[in-house]
Length: 223
Image (cartoon, rainbow, N blue to C red; front, top):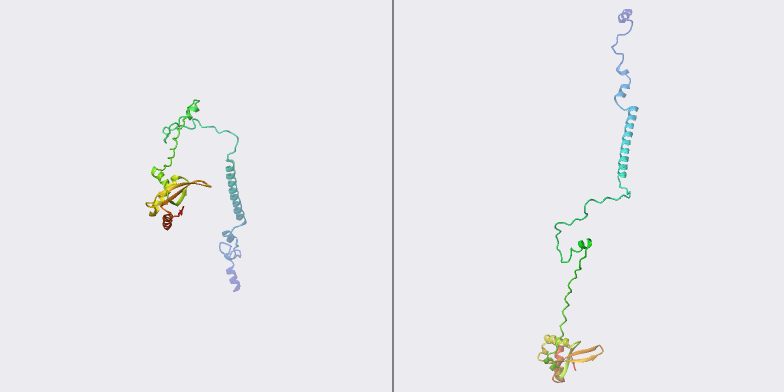
């Protein structure tokens, strides 16, 4: 019986009837898997070569641009720049501005070899002479000869200033209202002075007048 079964399985030349392909899935090599994913040594070398080429292009570009910029700098060669054609300056048709007499017409004539007379400014008028100090009026001259006891109020460098001092003091106090005065010339170490004095009838009246003046804030001295 066993022999019969072997005979039934014997087909052809004694080989088993298998599929068209001799490869079995679990017996296939890993070559296809390596091809499907990952990089081999050739791809890595190619990528590195590409990076080197790009780096060389960048370095070369920078070198070219820098050398070109340095070569374009102006170098002094001693040559002379030619002047432009035509006049350098031209007079405008309407220069504007204000013109003064005697100016603006000398330089062109002199530049052409001519001569122009110089314009001299008119001399300035001399300053007015100072007015002379007002002389003493006849009434004031007569007051200088008045007799009596003097109450000295101040001393001045000139008679005119002494008379002006009397007017100022008379406005400051009513005590001098109606009182006569005189200017007495005197010699001191610094020169001539003019003493302004109020005149009183006697010494008692002079002392009373001086006391009243001191009450008004004025300084005085009975002479």
